[in-house]
Amino acid sequence: MTITRRTSLVATSLSLFTLFTLVAGPAVGQQKSTSPASTVRKASFDRSPPGAVQTVRFHKRPARADDQVEQTLALEMRMATTLRQGNEVTERSQTKVRNDQRRVVTATHIEAGRTVAVRVRYLEATKQLSATENAQPAATSDDVSKTSQPVAGKTYFCQREPGENGKLAITYEDGNIPPSDECQIVAQHMEMLGRANPLAEFLADKTVAIGDTIEVPRETAGKIFNVGKLFGEVAGCSLTLKKLESHDAGTHAVFLARVEAASNNASQMRLQVEGPLAVQVDTCRVVNLDLSGPIAMSETRGSFSTSYQAIGTGQVKLSIASTYRDAKR
Image (cartoon, rainbow, N blue to C red; front, side):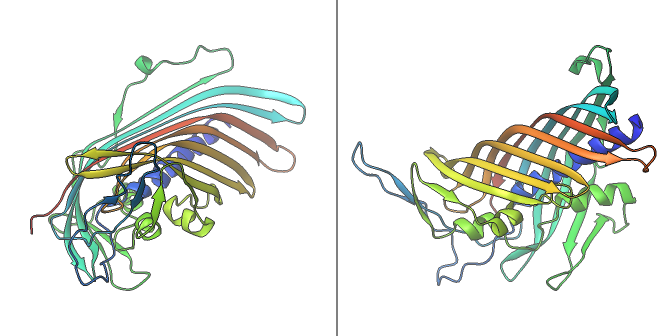
């Protein structure tokens, strides 16, 4: 049972990693503007007198070949699990999973204003897993060594085939097809390639005042935070604009993001996270995301005569930082 439980938890952590890396996406999947001017429009926000409410209007930016983004991602999940058979507790355990990744994504081909092909280079990709049972002392981060993921140090060429449901083709730069474990990881991270950026589609042309809270429709939130089968669907999502920050690359709108997801099938899962989400005003691209909150699971396993219930509670933390290098015109 212990092996099954650990495997399930690792799968949960990988699903979470995929869930939130979709927010960052291959940064260049914007849909082409229908405006006569296809260049980037400057961020516009109201420089009102002191005491007045500031507002900001968001814009999109058409993708260009050679656009590049470097992303640093970190996910950590801790969970305490109890196994029960009837009224008897058969096992207690604590598990910690951590995934770290640093990658560079470069747009190589644009069609109809969307990036349909990229080159992704994994500068770093590591994972950690520690598990303790019953009365054993909990392992510290120093007790657990990092292991490289199979994509670490490698470069891949990814292209979305034509059509709404076009498949994602993944090869090495020499055209050879990578092993299935590598393809699975890359496919999860490049899921949004060739598709419209749902966050940009939602925010573009909206005017928002500091202090305003935007309730994101569930269908849209489900595309922004693609929770997949494990968590069922996004039950709620809101964005509260907290402040505007000026940077060399433009203005960033910093939201407080709140996301809740739940699944009530055979494996019941619940996730509630919140934290700052920083978005470029003139492109709607995510530059920083730092979410944390509780996670809980409950599921029944085994056959009728040997069934047992697994109940887990814990915390999840995820951060994404993106640095963009726009192609020269």
